[in-house]
Amino acid sequence: MKFNQHNQTLRIIIAGGGTGGHIFPAIAVAQAIQVLQPEAAILFVGASGKMEMEKVPQAGYSIKGLTIAGLNRSNMLKNLTLPFKLIKSFFQVRSIFNEFKPNAVFGVGGYSSFPVLKYAQSKGIPTFIHESNAFAGKSNIWLGKNATKVFTGTKGMEQFFPSDKIMVTGNPVRKNISSSMYTRDAALMQFGLLPERKTVLIVGGSLGANSINDAIMHHLEAFTNQNIQLIWQTGKSNATKYTNAAKSYSNVYVNTFLDDMSAAYTAADLVVSRAGAMSVAEISLTAKPCVFVPYPFAAEDHQTFNAKNLVDASAAFMVNDSMVKDSLGPLIIDAISQPGILENMCNKIKAFAVTDADKVIAEQIIKYTL
Image (cartoon, rainbow, N blue to C red):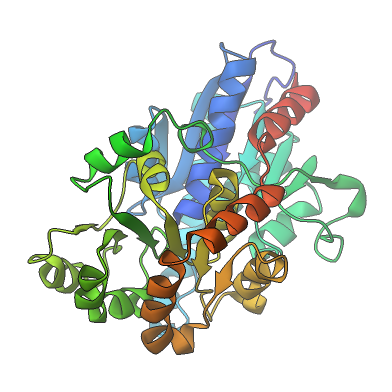
């Protein structure tokens, strides 16, 4: 089938997902495309059963799900069905393309992006990739060779992608976070918390982080005694345990997922977070003092690398995951009691903020497609 690449209407498929670190930048770019090209038709493609199937429609976009899964490293038997799922996903992709007729495809990582971009490349449709991390994912590396353009969150990505295709853009952040409409008091009201108390936001990433959650749970009494209140996103793993632990504390707002991150960041005096590329981008843009707890099993330990850039500039704290149970609680209490240090970190982290990555990427996609 021949796809018309020279329509004057942009018809773009945005593929990928699995975590908020892939989904939310994709939504940010979709929103930027629509500002520049209000007539653009945008369709998301993700993996059935993953969080993109919920979060993308919430943002107002249509999404199609593929029957695909990643490599299961803990149970190799589950990988026996992988070849069949991959073949089925290619048939599903072909059907989606025949129906939607895209003239550009943008991939943000996650295993659902691979069959979509691979099929687009086989049909000569312009493909664009965004790699948010300092160490590129496998599927992005494979796809990068034939991509029209590769957008990266950081410099020095020539070891992964052809240098003539790389454009360093930084990482796109959702508009509702980059331009919050809340005052601090109004943001705290969203969570039923008090404006006169210091507030700590805890986010272990969209899928949660048990080590961080356990440390917070063990220090709930200490935080209460110090007049510290919490906005705590637990993720789904062991959520009931953490929700029950927080039940008797009026100074704790707890939920498996925070839909309004704009309010959460605005309310926070200090943030505790994993150091995924998108978390770092959001925290830098909102200029919040932060304690990073890098995920220790990230490929090439890239989360430690992400956090270290800020720590070396005195723009953030860092606690190793192995030390988190004993060290995190006391560090939070100590930091909150020193407003001068937090204010200094606010000023320094601003230097790491990228405000227009979504717009730059959208402009490039339009330029190379229409």
